[in-house]
Image: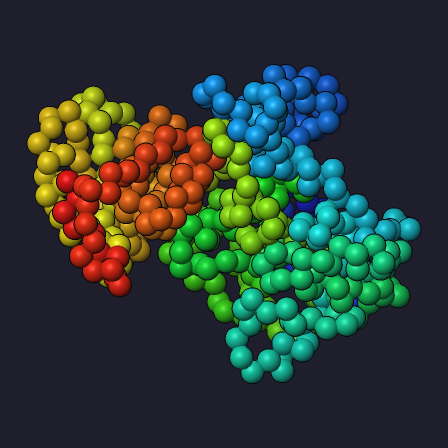
Length: 460
């Protein structure tokens, strides 16, 4: 493991309380395959390895090129156009587009001024020396989640040249999880920074509006977009530093069966709106990352061209999380094909004869079969992905647990027993990740016993 240690100079502010550790190392504990890409991204030359969004990154040198097997090109005129379309829709080409769109909404005039930069439709923003007033949260009598009225006029702002008409024009995706319009529409200029702030946060702070934390498919849309936003925001040695704060934009204390995933991104506890209830807080650096329900966004609502697979962005995300969580691949000493059968412990979409199916698989000597229930009451999330990462064929009924495909090895296969007429959900996610996907197509091989509970039986 490689670390670059940079000792921070202590900061003293007499008129305000400053939150800052005395010395924090800059973390380069990343997957070994990613390190040269990070280091090359801070140089102006030697782009023999580049992520793909750098201005001088040639196609043959980028992290990974998607593949579009088969003779067809879908609606693209050429095979190269087909590959490039997939790259722009669900790969580092999407990151490149966001980086190219970034423009000032509030522009610094002097060195110590604030700044606010955003992409089109305010899907991603970053700010420097930004004030946020959390005082009116004291008057909220109900929990805050997916609300657009957390702030009001003048409760977010900075000391800079404000291009209000420009920002207003980008507030067209006004929805809780589609853009930062609900919050930034109230941006205003302030006379001085930090002014009357009760608290100054000097480490970078990521403010996240998250999707359903109880559902792996939806919550990992948050994590994937957080990782993509780190690429949008920065480059070089600091882009994956764990010395960042994460503030979840709701008043609920963050809890999730997948919470261990945040260990890949931050060394600090997760904040929520109640952390700063009643205070005016100044953030020296904030990141407002890409969101889970964006129109034509990443992961969720991604319009993918047919026939292509293998996104470098999704592969890098998988490697990054696995490496940061110390998930290892064990040698396959017996040479058998390792099959993991995901059994659901809910009342919906269960396979009544799954034990017979598993027995039939075990009758083949070349298979090593494991039946698992991925529940936090049985296995921690790290223990779950440890099993997934050491699986060759992952079998399960349509459901959020199939999101584990993100952490299958590259040669693995996802077998979705039945897609429940949601044909593209895990098929597209598997295409993005670059693992093979198959599903049951002969409807004569299974029958539904309880249509209300979607319980399937007699799968042959």
